[in-house]
Image 1 (cartoon, one colour):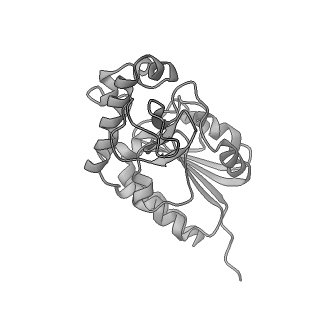
Image 2: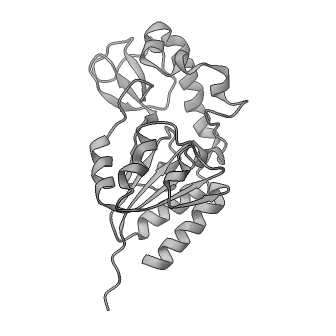
Image 3: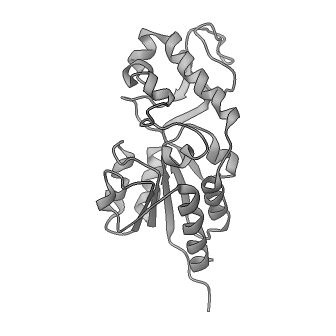
Length: 237
């Protein structure tokens, strides 16, 4: 008999999966976000008002990426993608590059990426590892003063929503990992698939939307994710 075709799989990850690599979340009392108000560093208005402060904040976060590495949860998801025979999309709210470094390829960073910069003058997007400032010229148009982190700030539209929507429309399995459940539109994904997909939440503690999931497991991502990946591959490999 032919092997069963696995369902379309959409995985959503949030800050909780990267926390175990050493990256602070919004809610960590001693993290980078605790020292700044969101309104001061994560909105278009903040960048217009004080670009130097915004650049300093994201320069520090970008530099921190050199100090961390993908953990067992990132690596397990990359392995799941390699072995999954059905449709697969990994959607992350995280702007770090840990999924990329782990080997994930069918990946949408819906809130942008720390290691990219965008020019407000010509809209060109560039890979970026160096510090940014108001004096940084755009490699494409050579104008200074318009380079900004390619991050989706509060009040801006997440990227590749069309691609995400298509995957949600056809998926039969939806897994949310390390999310708070209060940042939209990602927090609403589980409701979009509720009538056709099995839904699972993996989190250190129940999210605000945990009651919407058919199954919920609590614990560290580095333990829960590899275990779930092993279960899925044993069932659908």
